[in-house]
View 1 (cartoon, rainbow, N blue to C red):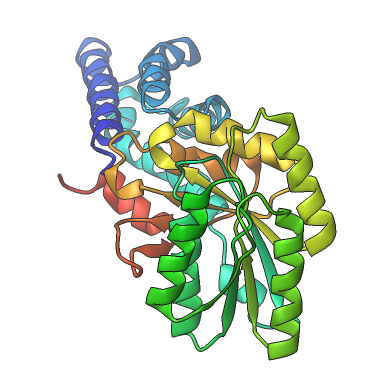
View 2 (cartoon, rainbow, N blue to C red):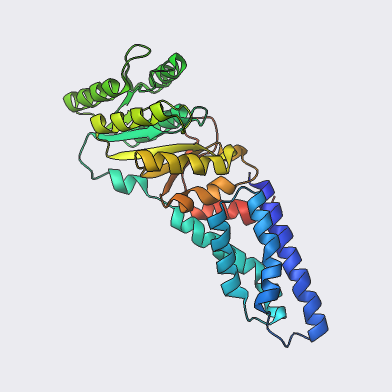
Amino acid sequence: MFRFLRRKIRETEEAIEKEAESEVKEKKGVLGIGEKKLDELLWQLEMALLESDVALEVVEEIKREVKKNLLGMSRKEAKEAVERALKEAISNILKQSEGDFFSQVEKAEKPYVIMFVGVNGSGKTTAIAKLAHMLKKKGYSCVIAAGDTFRAGAIEQLERHAKNLDIKLIKHDFGADPAAVAYDAIEHAKARHKDFVLIDTAGRMQTNINLMEEMRKIKRVANPDMIIFVGDALTGNDAIEQARRFNEVVGIDGVILTKVDTDAKGGAALSIAYAIKKPLYFIGVGQDYDDQIPFRADWMMERIFGED
């Protein structure tokens, strides 16, 4: 997990430390590290982060933070402070990305309606099932709406999850109006005093105009309390661009990032929440229902800077 990002960061640290060490020997450590020299050293960091699928605005923020921490230090001090400066910069980004899903929903009026958006293949259906499992473990009751009526496979997949979890599924026939499915699920939840309604939606590409109009209609009918974008960590910057597009169309409140356990680069996990200014609520770290965990900055810092 994040092996590529971890390796690139270490290579950058070593390059900066080597440069600083050579300057110490030449100048005996009496001069502070200058802005021009620091910019040259940070160029390798920028390239490393971009190769790791870190979003450009996140790269720039990390560079600013590192530069602020190192500029003006003696070269000897800079050599010793490189890892500390990088850790602080990346930690600041990640802490801004943390979201506390349960503090938002626990005291809210029920039923609490959550609409899920994202493209096909992102793991959206499984993410919904995992969240339903998590809510059920906390004592909440749920109903799931099979709102992706354009793919029979999506309905069947949700049926299997609902059966496994013993959770009510509301579905219509293949090709039915997704907004009507969402409406019926909400009415069922109200009548049966369910706590949460989890609405799946179709996931054709985010550039599809008809899909985006459909998302707007579902939002008008369901009036969800929260809209969550589900992105695939393996798609890197594509996941960020998808999130931006859905945010423009329907407005998203938070993110679930799937397949993080198989992501060697790590750029999406580092970038997505900061780039779209929305919290990253959960990350997928495996195939089982329990393998969707709240995102925490410390967790990712350990995987970036910890031992292989």
